[in-house]
Image (cartoon, rainbow, N blue to C red; front, top):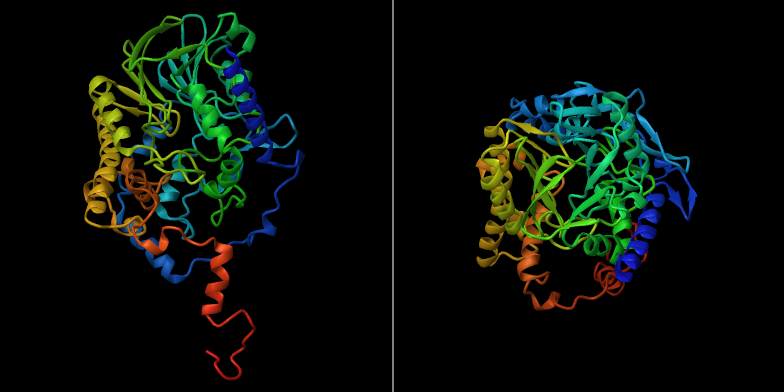
Length: 481
């Protein structure tokens, strides 16, 4: 490891550990969040107008299509007897039981029907068989899935979750149910912390250094793991609480789901640098007797990311490039604006290179898909929604629609709106469309008055003065409104 990589890893590890503690701590001291200080614990009952809107949505959306539910349940082996996973620091790192209100048939008028459907789909909890005797996943232990490929001598682990505690629980659970096996290799699909943060409970860094265990990652992994988590790390950590609503109480009026999973684990995050880098567009490798073809997909869901195909198993790992929802082009926690067109093209490459023969597709979030026709249907839907987002926004921009109008103008075609795989949860059409416009033409709306705006602290007093001043006026006297 060179000095630059070592320094970057130390900085990243310190920041990740700080971020992990901040999920349940203040200033290094564990403090339980008290939602009653911020929110009405009973919630606000929806108005009749909201209820009418929700009932209309229940009639207009394709709830009769139950295939996602069948796929989300398929291959279930067992669930652990516990619903909470404790952190080493003593607080709760993971609490699947807090979402128990979703395990009923009740339709909540306080939750968008489409979001409630997605939230129920993400309630999968336990060990699942993806491909008999070869591929398994533990789901519902963290925001992401942890996947286990059975090699000749041990487990090949794909994406060891966010936290040491949740990854340790997943590894222990699969060993209890299927027989204990050593971990012979780890694959990081990409550079986001929920896909590598638990690695230190899965393998020993000394074994990686000796070459006993391989850690495989896409080119640019360390660079972008640092860039995405350190350069703007403090701001991103703060904004993550807003994006995911992490301080909201978990109930029908608060936190319901995180769209690609239930929540983010609040435990110890770590990192071991990869020992094998996939640098070419496509690289074939045999790891512990399992043949894999890696597809680098830079500039998609992450700046450094890769899909994996298992030709002997006809199984396609879609990383986080294809999930059960349309993703963020601009993530509200703040990150580089993603390239919707590049994303679409990489899915298209995967479709024609692997999707024409794959019989199972699984990923780091959501649930697998089985059968070649079904796999191609989902791949095409997600390919087309990202392409449409890019192309239609550019079409509208060239017609004169500004960045401050685009979110009220762009809508996907009906043919995509009717497909669940093209629905937006993690990324909305509104902020994704603004992101595409910003990527190509920037944040300015071409109005000279907005080119160099005043800071809010300077403009706010002027608005107040324009409205009559800050003095109290109870409707008495001359000039009362």
